[in-house]
Amino acid sequence: MPGVDARRVFQTVTALDGLMAAVAAGHALPAVPALGIVAATQAMLTAACLCPRCSLVGPVITRVATREPAIALTFDDGPDAALTPAVLDILAEYDAKASFFCIGTRARRFPDLVRAAAAAGHSIENHSWRHSPRFALFGSRRLAREIDGAQQLLADLCGRPPVCFRAPAGFRNPWLAPLLAERALRYAAWSHRAFDTVDPAPARVLRRVSSGLAPGAVVLLHDGRSARGRRGRPVVETVLPTLLQGLRARGLRAVDLPALLGTAAPARQFPTDRERSPTPRALR
Ligand SMILES: [Zn+2]
Image (cartoon, rainbow, N blue to C red):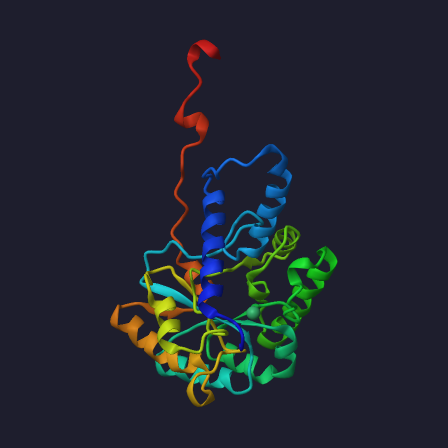
């Protein structure tokens, strides 16, 4: 995208992600003057909505606790007439599986590509009906229309409904989580983000998705709106074979997100406060 400094976008989003993760983990932020508390609260809520991996506005999957040597590959913003078939060919060559978070209007335009991806064993997930840049500003009714439009079409095309949802650019608001819960949809973010729609340099994109890759990771790439490098080649087409070779060399399998979620280790049972420090007998 011309005029966009990919490194600055990456640094800003990463910094906001880190800040909101600290808040979600219960760490205290520096004290603010009393008169600034309301503004700070508003700013924090806004930041939470703009931080794709923050759990303050609802449960979010960023990685999966698993003992399997597997990671989930996810592709957003397709299907695309040229790039989706190329991505499917590369995945088939490496016997890799992925989740395609499809935009409803694009799935309506290229239904055969959605069917082809599903027939090849990939999972098809929900990335909203029209991928509006104002998605996070919508109220409950419009959000429901965005979810349900894509959900119905993708279920009709694939014979099974999506089980995961991802918001455009990962921006949410507090009305989204209840709507997803009513529909038994899980909200999926990522652990590794390529920024492959704004950065055409394969080496940098590859470094972002490879660095610290471990079992349970969720990798975000795009089969739509890919940045284009030399001779107009979509960067994801250059990066994907190298990424899959690297995974193979490290003994990691690429699977779709529902498959990775299916390998999740049972949540560890933590003692409740009451169990940890029982009420003294004398106070009962
Ligand atoms: Zn998107």
